Image (tube, rainbow, N blue to C red; front, side):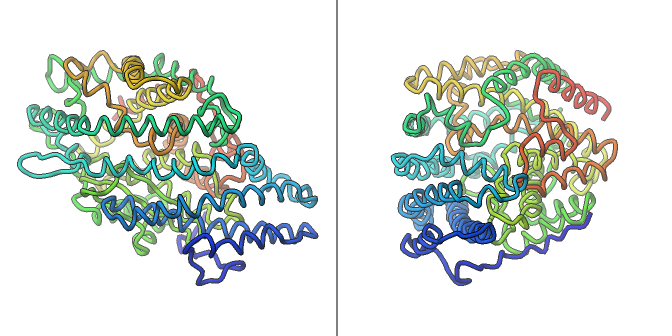
Length: 572
C-alpha cells in the first residue's frame, strides 16, 4: 500500500492558470459557458462535468482561504470584509447558476448513459440540491454565512488573567489540571464569568440564526429546520428517530460507566465531593502532562508519531508544514476551536487550532491530522463532487487516528508512567464525550422543533437536558448561573447546526477500527485507507463496510463497544 503525499495542484483546463476571483463579473463568463454549452454525447457530458468541477474547486478554495485568514485573525477588518464580500456579493450570484447547471445535468439525455455505480452518490446529491433550492433563500443564506462567523469574533476576544498574566480561554484551561485546587476553582470561575459577560450577545446571535434558519426551512417546504437540515446534510441512512435512540442508549449504557469513572476520580483525588474544576486534575504531587511547548514541537512530534504507523501519514503533515498550512498556537484575536479545511484545488488542507501545551491539544492535532490524511487520499478523485464525503465517515477518519496513534505516543511522553496516564485520560474521554454529544444533539432537536421559544424557555430546557446527561458524582451546587449558558461554548450550535451526532456515530466507528487495530494493525490501517480514498463515491453504509465496520449505532452496538473500551482502560 504505497501513497504519496507529494500532492499537486489540479491542472486547469477550463479556467486560465492565472485566473483569480475578484468579483462576480470575473466569474460570470464561465458559468454562462457551462449553461449555454451544447452537449451532444456522453463524452461531451463528462468533459462538461470536469469543467464544472474545476470551476467549483477554484471557487471553493477561494472561499476557504477567505475564511481561514479571517479565523486566524478576527481583529483584522480587511480579512473580515473580504470574507463578507464573497458571502454577500459573489455567493448569492453563484447559487442560481448552480441550480441551473444541476437541472441541466439531470435533464441531459446522456446522463442515463453515465456509469450508474460511479455516479450514484454524486447524482443523488445533485437531485437533493435541486429539491432544496429556493430563490428566496439566497439572500437569507448569505446573511447566515456572515452572521455565523460572529461567534468566532465574540469568542476570539475572550481572555482572563491568571497570576498576573493574560491568557485566552483555551490557554487558561491548562490550569484546570493544576494540583492546586484553589487555583483550579479560581480559573474555572474566571473562565465561566468571562463567558457570562457576552451571554446576551451570544443568546441574541443564536436567536437570530435560529429564526433565519427556520425561515429557510419554511421556504423550502419543511415543517422545521431540523427536517430541512437532515436532507441538506445528506442524511440518507438514518433518521431523527435513530438520534433519539442514540440519546437513550447513552443514558442506558454509557452513563453508568461515566459515573464509575467520576467516582474513581473522586477517590483518587481523596475528595469528599467532586467539583467541575476537579475533573481534569491529578492527585497532589503529580505534575500535569505537558507533551510539548510550541506549535513547531507539536508538529514535529506528530509527524514522528504518524511515521511509526505509516510513513505516508507523516509525509502528509510534513507536506502541509512545508506549504505553510498549519496555524496551531492559541493567541488573542484568533477564533476558538480547531478544524481541518480541505482546499479543493491545491489539495493539501489547512489545520487550524488553539494549542496551549496539553494532552487535549495532542488529541486535537492527531484528530485534525486524520482529517488531513482523508483530504490527501481523496484529492485524486476525478470530480470535486466525488470528494464531498459524508461527515460521519470524515469523523471516523479523525477519531480513529486519535486511537491508532495512542500506541505511538512515546514521542510525546518519554516516561512510561506518563504514557500510561495519557492513554488513561484519552480512553476516559472516549467514554465521557458521549453524554455531551447526546446533550448538544438533543438540545438542537428541541430548539428547532420549537422555534418560537423564548430565551427563558431555552435556558430552562437546556438545564433539563443537561441534567439528563450529567453525572450525580459531580457536585454542581452554586454553579447554576454558569450551567445555564454552558451551551454558549459549543461552536457547532452557531456555525454548523446539527453537525454533532456525527461525533457519536464516528466514535463508535473509530472504536471498531481500533478494535481491529489491536488485533492486526496493518489490516486496520489498510481498511482505514481503503475507505477514505473512496471519498464520497459510495453510500455511508458502503464506506463503513469498506473499513470493515457495520453502520450501526443501536443500543446493543453502543453497549458492546463501550464494554470493549472499559476493558482496555482497566487493563492499562
